[in-house]
Image (cartoon, rainbow, N blue to C red; front, side, top):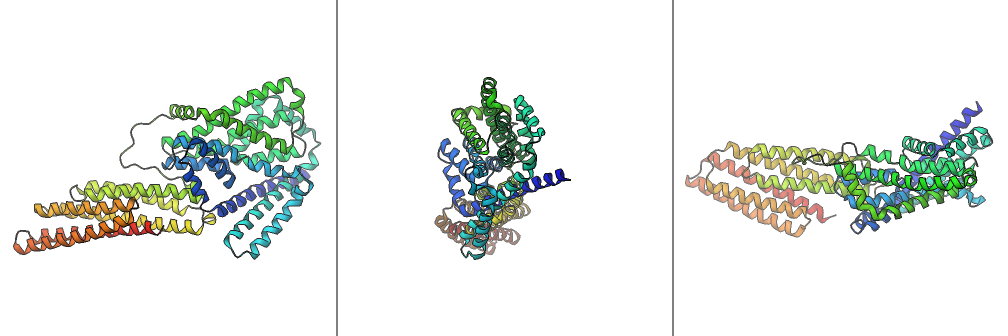
Length: 525
């Protein structure tokens, strides 16, 4: 019964630790606000900038697995290139080591022990939450409460282990793991893959280390295995994505496997000649130092070969033929955990969607209805995917500005869908009105090109020019309508054909109106 209580206490402590990390990450993201978006813009620099960005973003969301999943999603949405992804992945491995330093704080001072610091953080966070009037102070409260719950979890795990630290089972287990590096690597990889968090698995290992039951020989290889196990999440996330996204996940795996093998071999040789060090106990702080040093060293070692990693991923994930025309890449819903970055991917897809709509407007005056219907099908699939992505945004960490951006993006989707729907209607009307006169047909083509230009200017956020172009469309529409009416009065155009032309003209005017709304939408961003 005592053993069962200890197991439940340890499991409950682990749950609090993971939830505390989640709450802490939410608070950090809320406090960061639009800074995450600025970090993404910083990626347009060089690969070294991408490393620092990856480290900073991972420190914000407290999970290299989540950061790499988002990288896969951004590559899939063409927001990020593979060259940028390499740097971000390297930086993510460095950023995730911050949790290890937080866990090890209890060894630095008696005041910093979880049993002392957890109540202090919880009390400060609660007072801040209850008294704060400004939104930023509430974000700070969430950070403090997250820290408090995290440390409570650590204290619970430590208390559950404490009565059994002298049991031979711990010494025997870690002696076995330390005797064979493969055992240690597999243990770290499997545990991390199961709980899908290298930070959490490192927290478990550090808790055992602080209890004095872990030796260097086992801890070092378990830590290396954890870096491999954390790749499982990204590999799962790339299922159903395009080949570049799969290559990003493979790059993450290659980076960690190569680094773990190289460093692991060096450690094996070192421990072979220094068995006393291998059998000596490791502390939580020493593990934090080792974990950070390992990831920094791997980044330094593999940074010059980033291009080689991209080429190798291309060999392992070869191109699967030409991309089908009109096909699009689906947005990974897990990107919603970082709304500021996810909105960049979403708006990239909206841009691509509006480009298809622009082509449809130009084609509506001369292409058959079937061609326009195919384009409409592609746009509707994209609209559904983007809508799901917008609905999947983590609203709890979104700033007011990000909420407004998501609302404007939803309105843009409606305008674009309506534009292509009207284009299909124009093609359908033309198809039924056989024998249109040449002058009306040429006028419709001119009007279609003019309306398409309004949409193009709106898509490129050239707002003032788009609004001027919309006025030009209105003037052209009035001129063309009068020509049709004059021809009908003169008897040179059948009434049925005139009605068809007037219907098409009216729809082009509405297309231009929706393009104007898109432009005004950009104007208030």
